[in-house]
Image: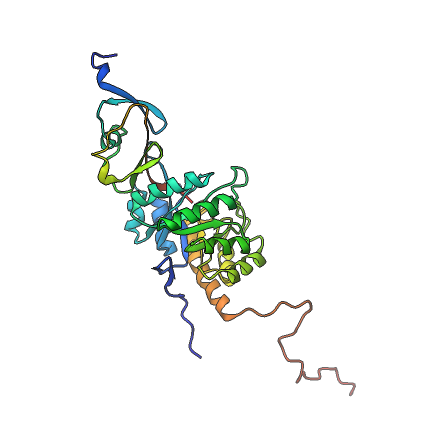
Length: 76
Length: 267
């Protein structure tokens, strides 16, 4: 591990463990998952509660929180 | 006599006007190009989508739907509880900026039949939050009435289990459900081919939803075209009024005026 261990926190993102910088926002996590935060048709839930897009850059993710980033895809 | 228009014209559901009585499910297509071609051939202007984790859901579908001139109807496919369905609905509304929602609360992965208790509970919650709920349900007229009372904008009875292609197994129940509710009835699930869609419209359904029947057919674009004509044919036939069923034959040709064709006995 690196010297800045103390600066990262462990969260769960789309079902997998992910280390993110302390203070990372929902918008940061969306980007870390490889998505464009401005893409239409994407939504985020933090511990099962929807975070409106307008609050992605204002909402910090805390250690051990579960983030789900979803998009519209083929179905039914 | 004037010839009726082949096109039924627009209809209204959840406060919105739709041109087509065919709702296209986007699942099961081999690729985006086939989907886009089938959407164009179907003339549908409403397409269902599911919400999935971005790392397991390729982008591009939403753009293809909107480019095809259709609006989206997000679903809660894969939800086995009312709570999961409600959260998925909220995600869909946030992602797609629509209050329209196809509510699915499934009972188990083998039958994929709708869970009536979970569906009703979720429908009440979502209607109270302002969603326009299109509720996937069994073909039970009483449950359909309860869903309407819960505030659903449309009820979507199954013809047969999802993806089974068995068609409409209980046409009688569908027509009873049609009479039991005043909101639009959209036949969903189990359709196998275009004639099943025609039957649904003949039974009084306002529209049908087809996914597998088109996307997994041998030629999805051709089948989408067939469904487009089938909903028009079914709507026309339903409005025309079918003849009553009879136990025995009943000649349509008059028996009066039959010529006497016995051979003569002359020399």
